[in-house]
Length: 403
Image (cartoon, rainbow, N blue to C red; front, side):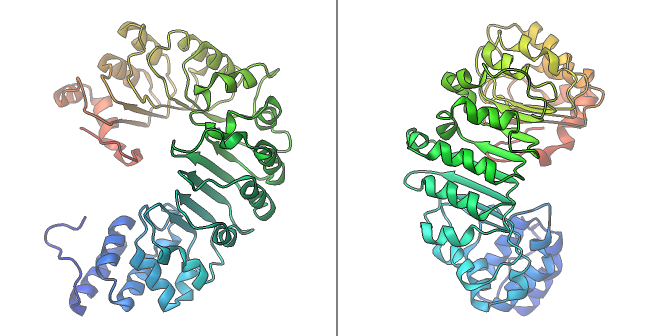
């Protein structure tokens, strides 16, 4: 937020002019707050957006995480097509207003490339307007009664031939039978064939648990998907029914470069062993996992490994010594992130930091507290201290960082 010596924008033209000079140095979400406070002055709103050039910021890629209604509705009212031309991504969430969503009805968005809809009830007809040939990325988080059907998947296939990233998730309240509806799995398979430029696939288990082995074979072996480089299947491997469809597939999957696993069984480890070229791996390791660790032995030389522990780092019944031995074997890591809700093994962390000479990013985030970590101990271990404090920017979501 603004420091204490800056005052919120008021109707004073002098204060607004001063704020505009500060805007380019502020994060996009702070700009959103400024825009919200100065929303009554449409001229100021457009100036702030123009000076900040938030639309052209490739690193931001979204309007901002919580779209401000004043900003989009004012843009629509002013019909500033020059600003609308700069919009690259639209991100709407469940708290988005009707005025925000209707911005697409008011203005032409010729450079619109990415769409994020998270539990937004916009109606099928408006969704059809959003889905256009220029889209490169699409993220749909479904919830409650906002679940698109087979027609949505077919629409994406027909209208988005150049789609490179597709994310379809559920907020957990969606009926688990949605993916079992007649035609949904086939529609998804057709989408994989039709969108030949897909590089990033992220599909929730509410759909994927109903896929048969032919769809997984198409994904893993890139049948019809010559450019597939990344694969995300969050929460997928919590379901043994899904594992039984994947594990029997013959041969190896050399084209899989990145994968997310949410299971600690020996079967999951066996599947990983079929992916010799994995360079980035997200592990949601739950309690237990003694049979899972040996299956990861071939990954000790991966370039980039990310661990996300959603519960505890202690892999009972493994001992602390086993943790240290396991993590110290990863000597060529580029990035490591710990996410946990319980006690973190300090010796294992220190062993990893000392053993990975190439480690360039090491962050620790917690949903609770930093148990067992004494800041003084970090000063006694300079490599770990530097890594923890240097990479706060990689953290996101509800995590909190403790130095």
